[in-house]
Amino acid sequence: MPLLLLPRTFLFLYPKLKIPKRPMATMGTTTAQPPRARLRGVVFDMDGTLTVPVIDFAAMYRAVLGEDEYVRIKAENPAGIDILHHIENWSPEKQRKAYDIIADFERQGSDRLQIMPGAAELCGFLDSKNIRRGLITRNVKAAVDLFRDRFSLSFSPALSREFRPYKPDPSPLLHICSAWEVKPSEVMMVGDSLKDDVACGKRAGAVACLLDENGRYDSPEYANVEFKPDFKVTSLREVHTLLEAHFDLLP
Image (cartoon, rainbow, N blue to C red; front, side, top):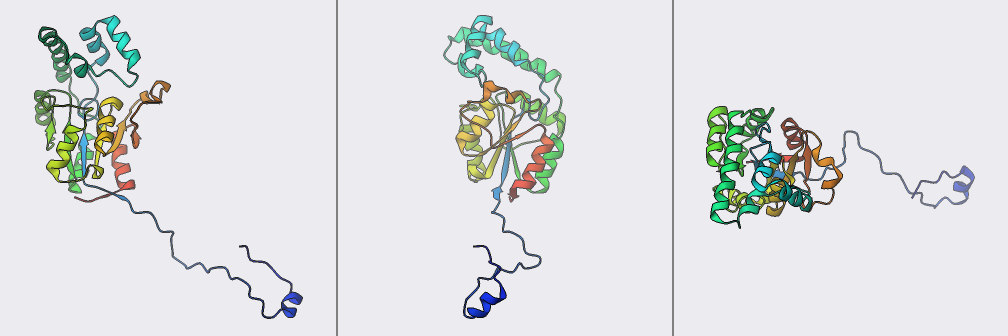
């Protein structure tokens, strides 16, 4: 209720009138901030997140599926094609040929392997806070080992395609949470794929951060996807900033 400014004559006639007082501001006080969420671990995707994207996934999918099938499946799955899930029900011989094609594209990617700018610095920051670091990739273990050896960055656990079921199923992320003995809500999943990384994180009950360097996911075709990230960044350096701004980093 606003304070009324009353004339002196009114106060003289009604001396017992009680006038509400404004609360007095105290110097140096600030509005209480809501408690920040606790974060105890960060799990990363590898290809396109910790490493610079070098695999031409569209070309790989076309090589595995054929042009007509690729166009049809892409139209039905706006968030992206889950090639590993798609070929699971193929005959053994057809599966073998598909995996050979995929492995060939992955080997070509390994030959041009580059670490993502900001990755080493972000990992160093997490280490300084004693925050756990894990990794989940749909690539093979040999690729994970190559990344570790080439850039001297290790993650524990580091789950590759050999761990089933793989992303976007939440099982690998829940496995890591169990190994760390932390709640999924105390973990952040960071990756560059809506259909794999964000879906995995949200299904597990974790915080999901989407790395979208070029604004790819700003396109209207991704507006109605089932799982959306809690945060969206254009670089791993931004992940460092949002961690400090939004979370209590406690081991």
